[in-house]
Image: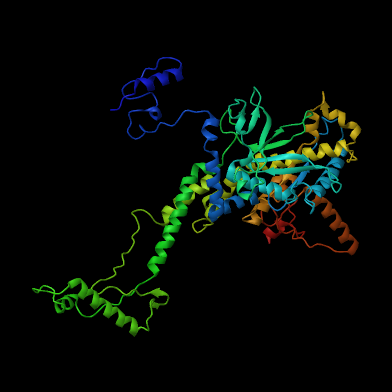
Length: 564
């Protein structure tokens, strides 16, 4: 058996803080066994989160993006994230805490209506005011953030103030490639800077070092410069300048990597497996023909004098024979150099030689099931169900699909809060601050702005004012009738609200109520009556019956019907 060296034992003692007693069979935990041949060589480095991550982040990000560019499954998985979290329209639902602000319910409703209308008008403007680059509107920007997060595990942006006459609001968001967030070359030994982020003694971010251009942009010509811009994380009064969204896996973790890293090797192998399988299918579908002489090679060689004493120059004679034979074949075929049958070439072989096609067999245990197992790795890495990731519903039923969607939705909700809501909240807070200080809101005037700052810094009242929910993608329905009935029952028994149920459908309940009121008035005005099927209970689907007085929907007594 292999033994622990004195050096290894000393390192363990230093780590534990006291001499370690090791028995011959290993420690108390099997996972720490050093004598087990199965895991004896498994000795991963014991490092900090940043030491583990920052060294490998660039290559992991590059590989993840390569899979996103060239693997249809991975690209589709990223699209599912965007469609399931953001959808076609990411809608603001302002939720100011009016009690903490010393306001009334009526004020809150008026503030919600005004802020939602003005913010949406600015954010979704076709002029793309929200984007400093004037490429994306608000919803497109949130979708971009979610997609970038899939491949890199983080999103980076900066809050800009652009003074242009055409802009009614100066606030704008500059999306930044995370590759540009790096430590400057001359600051590499600063212990307070890690992964381009400068931190204070508690680990809180102070500023970000962002390269003016991508590290690879030198290829675009002599205009390339290798400079960094230090951007303060916040202004002195609390206005956010750097937006870096990521989810920590460990303590003291500065940056993050994609969830895909854990399954990236399997996803790359699956891609190679599909390529090899396709090549094999093409090869198996092709065939080849050969042109051979009917004269046996032995007879030809005997006629050439092979084996007789004083035999002539065999190599020259064979060459002359082959040359003449192939020349005759070419002349017969019209001097064609590439004779083909349905596009398949027919080679002219040297007399006496044959072309044998070998069938490429499948390795043991490798087939469609093996590819499915690899795809399951990809689905797990992207936190999707296998059916959604592979688009393979052949073995799925209603129950399995419901379970898969429920599991995926729980993940999407948490990812929505971290990425989509986090990005949207940052943008919304920047806009509200400018709108108030420039006195652009009638429901909250600039003279009240001093309430939102304590000692010149944004306080909790500012958080209470800018509190908001975000309505994203619809939950989707497999069986619309059953799920609608379930929603009706939840509302009926107080387990949910119209706001929650309509938000699950991607709708704002206030707008729905306003529209329902408008339609009711218009129907009354035009004398239109909707025919409702009151004979069926919408929740249960069974005939409606009043159990208290025994009256059915048609006005007759159910007890009388039974006696008859």
